[in-house]
Image (cartoon, rainbow, N blue to C red; front, side, top):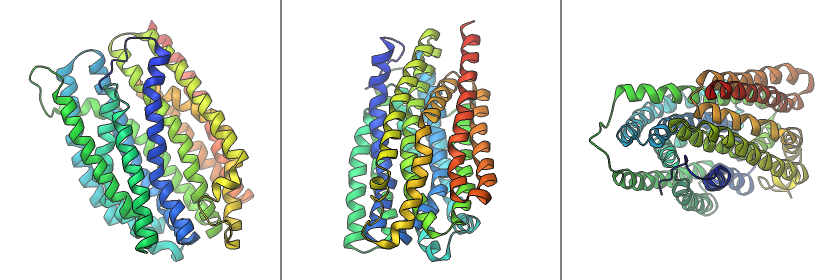
Length: 444
């Protein structure tokens, strides 16, 4: 259902729009979490480490998809808020066509470089072959992952956050069932988890595309172009910074993964479990940021600037509530959560579990900082302030990587874990200051 976000009370409207997206995150994260849980419990901790070794590389590809999603959704939201359906449709099809071309290029690149990237990360030889097999299968499914991300961005830019949720629920449940079938029944090992993800993403992407085409065709407008270079330039102006933001964070995680790999197989396995839980929380904050981004873009298009500030406040309150919930759960139940990914009865897993628990107890109390940062980032992006958006992104990335490399030789894995809260806190302050400066200029 298409929804105009420029009218109505802001708080209930934004909450009603955001909640389905947050539920979508839960099911989206089940993809990667299910792979690790089943590998760690039904294969061994080496399989868990193999998936963990390839994880930061897969996050780069996901970052590209997320960045393209964000860029196109802001442009489409702005046209939709201004009731310019002709340019809105041109933006939709330009986004889809450019995504298709990008996915082919990335697939070729990924297949040619998977082994090299794992070597650069100093991946242990014990898990190298499984990590490469998992990564290659993931890369083969990039066209489906990227297409689904773009379809989701278009749905949300039109105010529809429920349709992507329905697809994700079915796809996530199917992924879990196929994981069990391929790993437990067919004994396919680590590649089995990758094939389960591939199949479910493919089905989800095709169905999302079909429904989107029906939804777009129902919107009446004068004749429009299916592709415009000028429109691609406008989308790229927002997509490229968003891709760079997501990708640089993922590249930073690659450097950090290299440090983690140097700490041994137990730290690798523990980090593999803990980082999935950390990503789950951070993705929820990113989703809040994406929600206020679409909300802000529609209202900027309609010149409803006061609603932008109200959207920022509602997003901040929602991010704070989520941060408190995750922080309490991860600190209090860190042991139980880590052992979801590995067999608690196996004494060989004790050191790995302790490494994962240590990560959670250091990082999770600072979720409020990153939640508030990503909320203000989302508003800046929706308002089209690319410069401020990039400043906050680079500050977070550079700080976390530098601090990890400085502290690791002194404090070992603990030094790596400390880089998260320090980087989050400083970049959060920068992001929120830049938002209020931009808002003052906007209202003038």
